[in-house]
Length: 474
Image 1 (cartoon, rainbow, N blue to C red):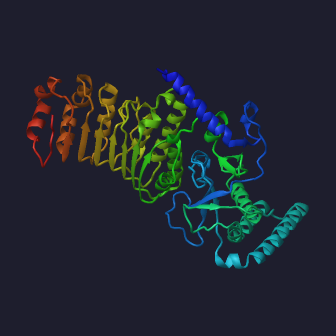
Image 2 (image 1 turned 45 degrees about the vertical axis):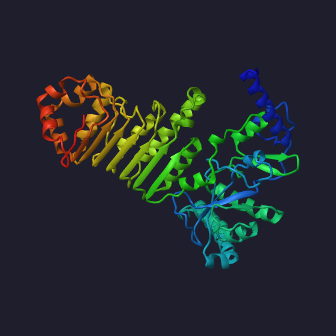
Image 3 (image 1 turned 30 degrees about the horizontal axis):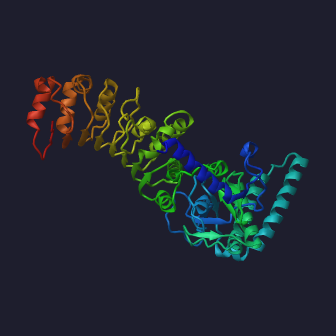
């Protein structure tokens, strides 16, 4: 019998041979080149990728008008190596892309006149600044600001012509568009360089690395795929962000429902929410297969994931119009999602549904600033410690308008239940009695002997056991 280790070694060797034979050269400028021993590295001839997608600006709707800005993004083409002849195979990266501002028809028509006038204006402003410095009593004009504004205007009025020369159709959203001949490449490079400079971006390649296959075809791949190809190791598809997944993430609008499958999807969602101002409903589905994988459970991978969800929690906290928020796991422990506790600082929240995040209420000194909650639904959120019970009690007490409360699979203990109810029995009895619906199902409260003996709690359970006023299944 062949041992599993031998089979794994054979598989790895086959994969390494397949990918290594696909490559003949990689760029010299990449910092990992100094560690390369198996491959010969040469400079790629192209200055920027040839494959682009036009997408709406972050936080904007899918429909793009004739004169609205668009973004161009360069996808990673590594999947086309794996799939053989499918040159259109790619996956999206976390890079924000480059925003191209489109001029209006009048600006486009008279762009040469606008550039001439702008050039003369800049000379006049410089002359006025020199005179002001010489005389000393004249106010100094804001030359730098004017020059920057005019430069930006000159770049914008040429963008429509550049897009035409580059062969890019700004109305053809989410479809691959190729920049092939020298004139197209030159026009596209001018566009991307100007957009990158305006956003303080140094790279014009979308943080991709160029490689050249044996057949002479140049491809651009992300750092992760670059490292896999260089070492001959298989590329993990679980980390890829497909076009359909990307479209759902950047859809934006007043309602957002997305599935977070990997780190790239979280980064893209954070970028979208940072640009959104009118989102009032967000539903997040988190797939734990990637985030809680053993290879990402310690060290730098774990810290990176924890940092991402901390940042996502901060972005959700800062949403001014967010009224309805749902976050669904399921998670085995939920520690990597602790940063999502920041959503309790969102002052506009009215509905909060959480499931599969066991440690959500476990933090000490948890800050709760939401005061408008009308509905709270916690499924699989543990309330098995004194601290978690204190946080739940504060959440209930500080939201006077709360009318519906559901806490299931919370694994209450004697200590946590006594902390939740017995510390302020009259207050909690009153708050529970005011609810239109209270659901404590899937909790073994019979083990807590004082549930039936406590007069306040017993009265509440006897008086409000049946719907429609309220239900308290135990």
